[in-house]
Length: 456
Image 1: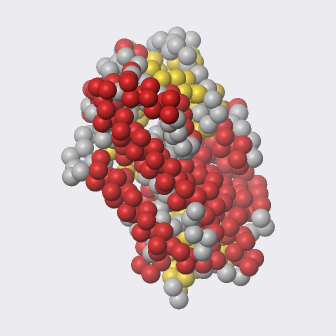
Image 2: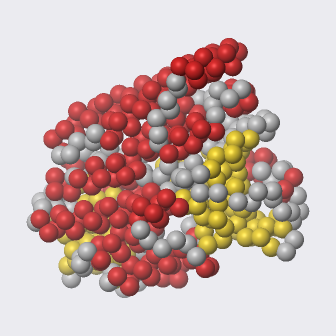
Image 3: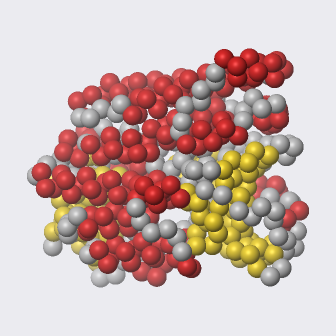
């Protein structure tokens, strides 16, 4: 049997892609290795911004899938003496029940007309005449070939198909370990009520969470306390510490966790970088974690993965209608994703590289002296330019005489964020300009990593 669209992975990216593909009239097959009742279950922070739902024009979380409304984030300095409250549009949103939300998205895809095959593992792509024309799957009864005009890899970090595409497509098959964060997360019942539970909490500390951070996201209130989603992430640099051991040392020792009860724990990894250079091949597309679509600073990827899934499905439908599902025919998806989210993501990758280079003392001083402000963090999260006017420069200079290097670096990073954002907004409309564009991007990021990371 041949389908118009095969979607591998029924997570947020895949379920949304299947739904919007079916709504465009495509014959869609959605494949997932999990049993139907487990689809949506995943180790993550469970947070998603409202603006993603506004963009997608889909229903907001409600009922069992919604555990809390969030107005913003409280960001704690490493010495815990300074707290930035960052809120407003772009940071308000929801803490969800990941399984319930995932089940809803799959149900909506099926209701739109997509066919689901659960308990089915995808083994490899079928490549004929340099074109992906389907996938080989393993079911409880054996191997089987499934044919499709376009295949979307939404299989997450495993990137089952991306790793096996032909070299001639010039796609990044693998992601550098330094651009991956590994996390340990627990759902815990604490016996206290947190102040301002409508604000998620992030604790910065290179000592506790090198290349990452500690998070405490309030979920449900209970009679004598709260349920929280809490964890710790570290960058996967050479010699990185075990996140679970760091969590036990630095998180469970916090006062709020004294006498707390573990409900569930587990680890996961996520890419924390700009999107892959190209998200398309011949008859092939990437969406979600397989395309590195998560936010580089905080690692959240639910919203951006859904944006990618929607745009991928809509582009696939157009390409099928036009009779050209080659890399050239699907190319516009790159441009659409970068305009919608990727340019912001690339700018945040610049900010991430800078943040990961800071010592705890520099970051604590910078926050306390307002060299870095709440507005900076808000603008960075939104992917906006950090514009330091003449007055601000003078004020920050006077504040930063003790840390002049930090101030100069902040200005340099602000300029680079603007440059990179514009480069991604100007992503080549056709494949013809790809090689030169890619050289420019790699030169910028190689220089940034050399400047701020050196030899790790």
